[in-house]
Length: 202
Image (cartoon, rainbow, N blue to C red):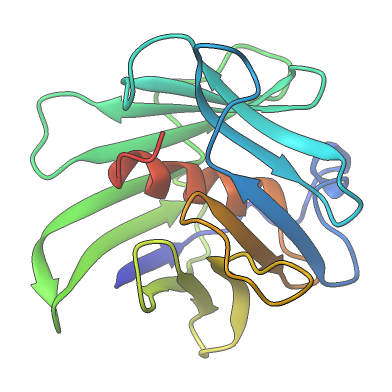
């Protein structure tokens, strides 16, 4: 289970509005980079268009990765904090200016304990904000399946292995992500990138 505490970056600025829509959105995450000899992931929208990508030219699970859009614009710089046990990852949202290393957009902390046999992570989003809002990320049947809920238990996003049109379940590196309306899907993808790094899928 992943436990998430969220302090949202609301209200959304015009620069973030493009990552939120008024309807439910479905994405496909392929935990592979399209760049030869690169590690990462590629995210497609429901029309098959690439919308997000991570391309690492170094070894797997490196200490810093970049979530980008199709054109290569960095949306989040995701860093693993060194010399911390359990592991801590921080995501810094890029706004066209240099990122502030003292104000990450989110922080994900991997817990060293288990709850009902499931691993735990805690996430805080918007560390410089004052109004707390809680999410929790629950692992489902496998490390490839998650459900993200708000503090009232309402679904925010769900991740599971993708099925083909004829019902065949694809490999564990091909995922379907359903994001509810008015949710920042770039943030959701950023959190899933960290989950992929933790599970050593990138």
